[in-house]
Figure 1 (cartoon, helix red, strand yellow):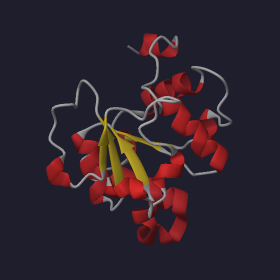
Figure 2 (cartoon, helix red, strand yellow):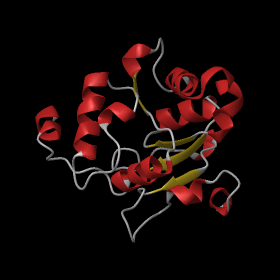
Figure 3 (cartoon, rainbow, N blue to C red):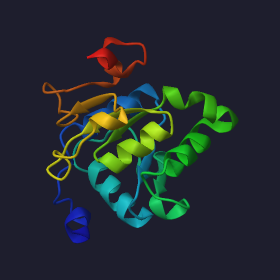
Figure 4 (cartoon, rainbow, N blue to C red):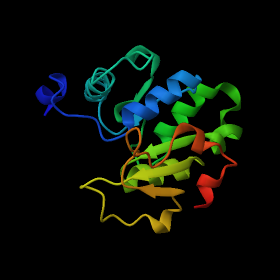
Length: 166
């Protein structure tokens, strides 16, 4: 699989490049939090960033918090708490409610919600049958969606916006 990722033979899920580009353009801090090791995550992120026109952000601009740098993996919130601390500084604990996580699994959604963050789940063939209702995810969609087929955009994610009530 890593050979396919490194050769850019695995296209990103619909809308991932678009939402990264929107966030980069708006100056929104981003991070990748994964249970995988950093080398694997870096390869996937590099593939995503290089799968089309430049997005205005480089791989070095997006910190990676991999599962091998925290004592417990998801569903424990440690990886999200570490990312919040690094990105938000000393007042991170009072700001986690302003963080939005895009997840694709139940254990990831559990970790995000346990960290006090908003969570959008994008279902995949691996997770479409997982139950999410009991963990309080804020939104469930099939994908982020490419341009003209968006399920949401960066502007929808305003914390007081209508998106969260739907």
